Length: 585
Image (tube, rainbow, N blue to C red; front, side):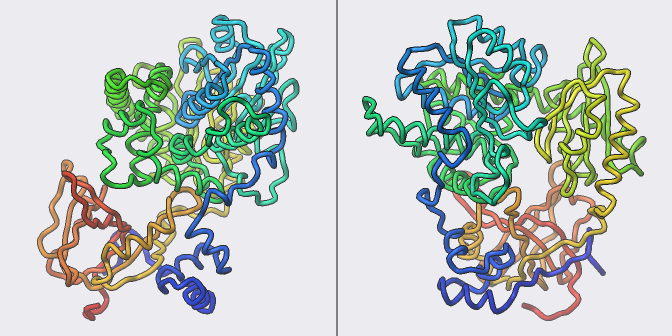
């Protein structure tokens, strides 16, 4: 019997390169093999990957316009000008806003904060959010965070009113340059493989803070000798991991050190949120703790039109208030889940009925279930399950459709939307995630143009169901130990462009029948590896439960499971098949 889900192929690495790494670095052949698979053939590159250091970070002033941004901020401090921070309402935007507010405060520069109301003010640096923010004080400088790259009209409006604008953002440019502003964006420069090339805005804000503190020390500002950007690593890591940017170069460094320091440098608000997520510092958090526990709670505030709640929590210092705000984030997240569940069911039905044989999916709707705040999550779920680019658009009362899109490898949604831009009222984002809006009269024409553009772009892309499952390495069952997990974790954090390895083990017999959980949608299993029992979980595989008494080959990811203050090894099953041989490995 073959695989339940797909064919398997074992990844192969150049044996000569593996041997060199093994000898030069004193590591196992298993770890050396995985490094070579990631393109790390040179021992010095591999060692830097395994043991990244903060001193490996490039000079922040290598990023275009960084010097101009720092000079303008220090001028605001010297002249005691009013500063307004405008941040996006997602995790990257909120963490960036909190980071910059705290950094400015540390050099004696006070700043006000405004986060757009998604439903009434839209995304980014809009006139509506500027009117609300500027109405609260005499501001001479606006700093836009995780938005503003393409806000030409708004930049002009600020200039006309004698207000300077700094934009710190990582979204793709629609034009070559943003006039009337200081733009700190890695896409301004030709891609020469710089380690900061793939940073999200939280990462760029860390670079800006690093540059600001360097200048502060050069100018011998009071207290500058005690300033360190290291304090901002936890928030930087949260923003980075939540924003799905490639985890390579400095993004990986920030994520790795930020996770390690999450409990060391966390503010009272962040500590309260960590505790609310069931994390207490007894064990080092993992990537999925950020992406599946912390990030959804922060995002839920913006999705439900209450982004200031997350900002207030992360800035709050009084423990009791922090605890209450953290619980409120959980309540928002539960409310978001209910809305999302209804929308997802409707979206799946539309996708199956209207786009089953199409290269992409565009689903639309209105009513309470079609909440603009959750369309991005649903688009991501559809794209993942259908392996197609998916747009989810909610119709507003004025007849405009607004929503989000998520893509799949090989399809750049920014490029696709640029080919349909004449039909859009607004659009932007990055290759895998976009936001857009269009009038109802343009909807049918847009759907045709979008599908045609995706068809041309993705004609060479095979459907996921036809692609094999790549197993990075097969191991003996008695090698499934904490030492193996420690070696795997040396490759992390895992995410975009740094995938978690899939391992394989052959000829395993389960010790008892698999137990279905979660209304039969998932199942748990266990087997003895010669040293003890190893437990596993199979998500969304309840219809493909393996037999107990037959030898099985398992493809899995190895994780650490925490329960009631203790940890244990856990296999997360990717696939299983009946063994082709009776050889007990």
